[in-house]
Every structure is written in structure tokens, then in C-alpha cells.
Image (tube, rainbow, N blue to C red):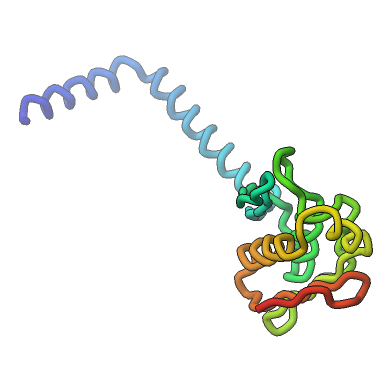
Length: 167
């Protein structure tokens, strides 16, 4: 062990004495990398990671997508942004969307542990032809409960009429 230590100490002193330019360049590169990382972290746009669950195929097997959405202030805005993204459907073409792409959230807010979500009228037409309503609302519930831990109940409205509530 003493021989290894003496060898490394000897080689280290030789490098320090014979290559000061290389050391200066290496130190400058390390500083540049640290400064670049620091500024990229400070000035990077804020994004939040969200999980989206969609059915796939006739068996409606659960499939997951991960998306990074821009960070917004306020829980209600976050919920509205999330539901809007969920209504747009999956990115993967083999997954089945829960609603038609024309469906948009009209109003979304969270009060006393309940998420109140009002969808546009197009949702009513699509529920009759696409994914069965029980399955669509089960996936919808899973998506909201997974991404909003403070929500205990979900109330879904279409054109102001309650169509689904869960706990």
C-alpha cells in the first residue's frame, strides 16, 4: 500500500511540475461546465411532470404516457391545463383517447378536496361512440387522482349538468 501511495504521489508531483498549461486548460473547462450547468438550471423554463393513463386496444389495457407541462401558478389553472391536455388524447396513436379531440374543459376548479370539471358539449356525443362511459370515467378518475393528490372527489359536468361523481 505504501508503494502505491508513493508511486501516485511521485506521478502527481511530476504532472504538476511538467504540465501547468494542461492543468490550466482542464481547470478552465471544468469551470466553464459548472457555469453552464448553473445558468441552465437557473434560467430553464419550469415544467412539471405528469402521468397520463389511456386505454389500449379492445381490452382497454392501461398504458402510461409521461408528459412535461409548463408550470402555472394556482391549483385551478394547473387542473384546467391538465384536463385540457388529457382531453387532447394520447400521443401514441395505438392508444384510445378518452374523449374526442374537440372536447375542451370549460371550467375547472378544486374546492374542499373536490375537483369540479365542466366539459364542452362535444363530450356527450363522443361518450356514446368511443370508449364506454364507465371505462372513460375510470381512466379520467385515475388520471386526476394520480396527478392531484389533494383531490378526494371528482365531479364531472357536461354543459353544466352533472354526469359523474366519485369519491
